[in-house]
Image 1 (cartoon, helix red, strand yellow):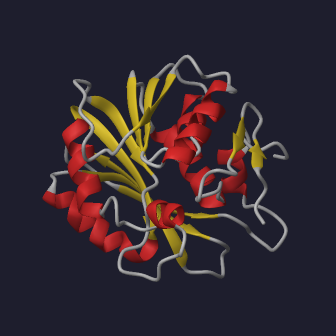
Image 2 (cartoon, one colour):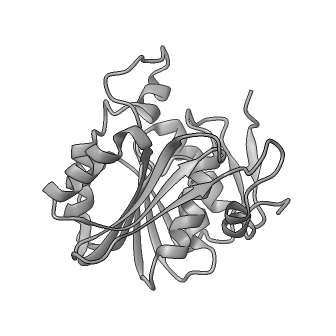
Length: 236
């Protein structure tokens, strides 16, 4: 069973009321995005869950974050994690569905670790399905609302399964979003990529691609992973 909490250097994530727990790839995504995000004043976290990404992105940045979460019990946990953190004054937890949510703000940064799976085996738990499956938020809807809420010079960051990479790129092109940085993620040097992290821009330009390996062997994180996570993980 997953721990009921995950302690970082500057904050703690309680997660017993959220279907989706803290994962290594989500932590890597938050750390990677934090190195890519330019100076920004506003950020929107779509499907904020426990608040992991919002809290990670609050480190070393002066940025106002709106974190929206649809699931009731998880939203309560999101509020708790924010309130207990050093960043409670800059993160606003919102209970709502991004498809219905309206705001006058146009965000310089939009980020999401969205539901991964479409048309795949469901759990018998509604909260798990909402968190893991795209019943409530398809990839098309995610891109539509990200683009709707972005500023004209904004950036969109997304973490998805590697097998959906081509689909994600095609979807982005339909909404005139252009890849700036792409990072394929592998569990080890001997595994195929299983996740991809992508930074999209509203403006076309050059794109860079890299591969990040989480562990260089069974017991040790890679140097690249340690460099990204050392400001977050307690034991790095």
